[in-house]
Length: 341
Image 1: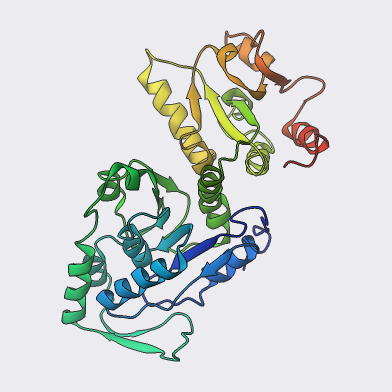
Image 2: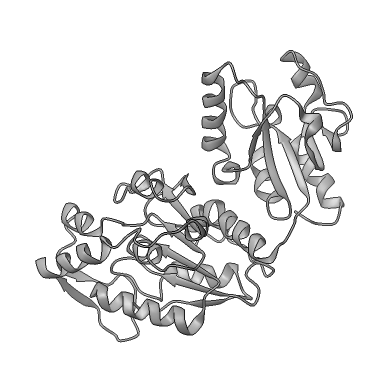
């Protein structure tokens, strides 16, 4: 594992159960399961080996849900297809193979297959024929059946922008509003998990617990340098700030300039990615933002023809000033507040 990315969060999912639903040809002993147990040491991670036959797998998952009552279900690839159908639970579907029979056909996932991870029954290989592919098609076509508004708000889809195996973003987004692209491939690694999946788990855990974190607004001018790249240490600061705060990104409301709006959204998606999803505010009246902190660059705004916020309803942090010359200074400031990042 790439341990430079992984760290523990004992307060997240504390005392809760997380059901992990693995992908095709994998098992409950995968690296993802080890990662989950490392990152959430005070959670119970339930990760059964799924039967090869999809009807049996769904029966097993429904039984596990009935017995374990998971607080959150995380499914990847084929497991994302199964998880989508487990109504009534909070779910994260990562690169869900919603059309798995087509995926199996297109990528040669037939014939003799080898399990990628050890299984409790010791079986190492399995065989995929046309009949089994048909079984997968039958089960996958039950997707989206019985959806209601409550269920839609409990499901988040995460889709890797470098996934060359499965792309069901558009299909998923037709039925669920919370569909997010993240930087990563089909298979999750430590980096994509920590940068993309973990923030979503944190949002869900906060919502379940009614947890309200201090609010920080960050002006987009503090994030972009003169070459259009992220300012030094800004990405590091964002990753650390979201651990203890509710972070929002603030950009000008260019209502008459659709191109500028699109460019700003695209920049945030590229360089901030998942943490900016649903956490971006477009406004020209920052004084109306109510929160705990507002990070903005007065000099940068003035050069762009704007002006610093007066009478802000939050403690202002002036990026680029003598006190906060860089994001490292801001990180140090929040660290002194009590180690909340």
